[in-house]
Length: 78
Length: 152
Image (cartoon, rainbow over all chains, first blue to last red; front, top):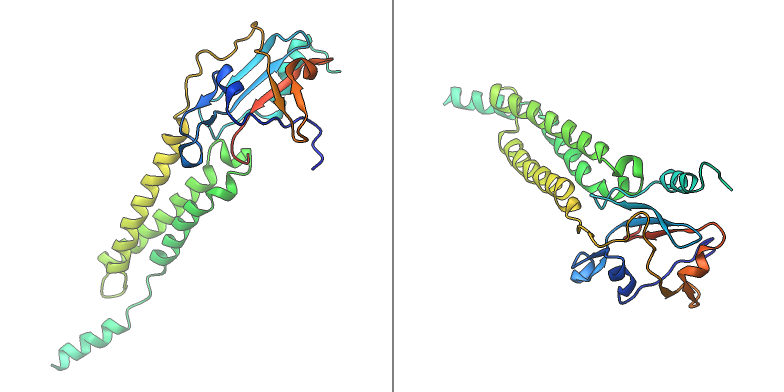
């Protein structure tokens, strides 16, 4: 499939734990999976936007991420 | 005896109480179309279509029950009306529990990276099996990291 972005696999949930976004037992057969979470990280590695939903059915919309990027860049959109 | 037979005949001619059946079908639709409407943020963030279907279905069921019990000589549906209304009540309770309680059971994530902090480094395989580091993703415009689950 032609993804325009990397789709990363965190099979043992190590990075998910490092980001503290593990949802214990919420997956199929009570597997530990990620809670929905979105971050914008700038070129220097600094976090500019964190979206931790309170309802797993409600996820960030694309506009929210774009606005976060715009805000981090001071209104510019490259 | 003639009288009894007469009543029996009137009984058989009682009208079909359609709101009970249509209402129950709409209630079932309210539950089973969730998978479909959950595909779209507009109908998933707040499941208003499903709640609307439940509302319409229950209203019709109530109309049917009022007919069945209020004018039993005209309308049928006491038994099926009561049965469907009871089942609908349980289905709605289940739906409301899932939507308004289970979906909100999200971990606190108190230790998640905060605004201004440095994002933890990682090295993970991508869809082609190639290892990708966070630093590789960051230049030149930074990156949006999305931890997701399910198909949406």
